[in-house]
Length: 312
Image (cartoon, rainbow, N blue to C red):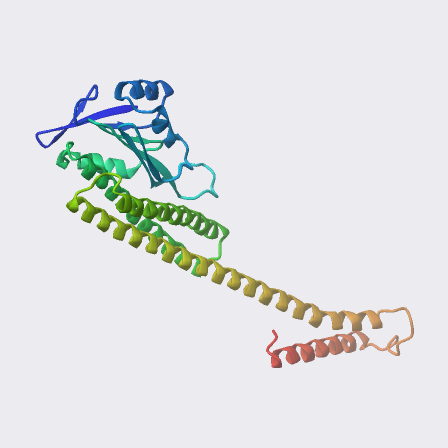
């Protein structure tokens, strides 16, 4: 699906075809026919439009003729039905600059583009560089919001694990850990992209725009640091719970071993007196009580020994 937006008197107006100063937003479902038509209409290399279809596309920028391409990673919710997949993944967003238009191509719907659409009425289409920087800003903000949501969810699951060691909570923590891996990787690649854009001045930024990009680099670094901190905390938490589970398992096995030892001696005594050989108690009316008291005494003595050693 292709959307055309233009800013008229501080109002966002959707148009049926591209005009001068139009923001072209390409959303799923994506069709090859639409890509071909858009490529011919705006004179954009077809590869620039289809690069977003590869979810593993790396962040980068390149130029072909008068058309410039920037690929940046942004987070989005994972719609997978697999319960072991990450809650969030990162997807590429292609930003294409032509002489008259700015084109964004999204393989998935994402919050960053929705935020940019909500503020498009405040943009100046003739200042395409600033529009690109504003897209970057919404992407960084989206990362931070998702990181805070992930951290809140992690805290809630940890509290639940303190009271109940259930596998489903550990599985949810593992899904959060996978999401953080996606975030750390994408934020690091975005940081390299921003720094390279600043160093090469690929967009031809003025002093104000360079200062804005420098602030974005700082914000992205903050998001990356948050992701690293949350990843380290989660890894430490999972290791701690793994140690707790192992210790609990060892305690259970130790108690079972002690119970087995305590019960072994009464069984042994009963077996000895139950043999079909003379034992001296064949005709005694108290034979059963003697064996029972002897077995109970041995069990109590062994149990007292383990208690003194603080094994049980």
